[in-house]
Image (tube, rainbow, N blue to C red; front, side, top):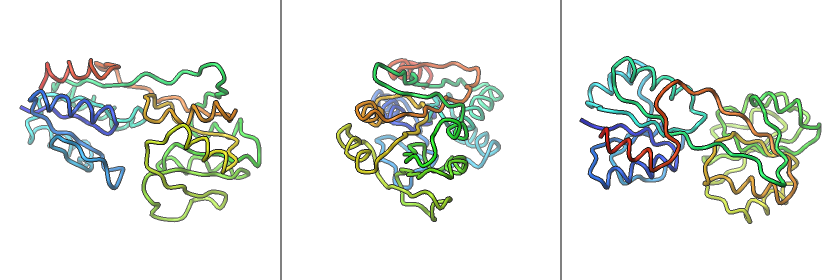
Length: 243
């Protein structure tokens, strides 16, 4: 029997490593969104499962006894599918969801329903830094009057989809000082982020507060009704009990 850890976040890697050190038999799974993911110290598979049917077959073939979902908070399709199929197959499932970011004194955040909503608030001719990843980039097409800068980890496979934008390549972590220097050099007016939570990528928000940059904060998608935990310690305890 094997525990499957969907470990596409920093916390997911830490959870999988801690369980592995406890002697829990597990497989860590990465979706393959990043071309050169950081190495994990546990048995790891990279790539999709081939849809819902492929995931069902993988669970059966690998004798998965439980699934711990530590994917990105915005990987809503993966999370919904995983929770549904685990329910169908009577496989214990737990979702690790880190707490959302909350604005503090000095922050100038605007809550956005989705990417398209940004155009309702951003002034024409603004320089907009998109820290939202390449998968949802086309949803910003309505910001045609602004200059768009999209940061991503891997070099792009093609040109920027709009004439008013450019890619910026960078691999985290980024220090607050580095982010301040970058935003100053680019003349950033707006920073657009998804409310992913966690400490690893908060430095850009610290930098925005320091510089008085406005932030568009995209709200999280709805989560399935399922067992969930919000700390690494809780996730490890659940994995230990079900591995």
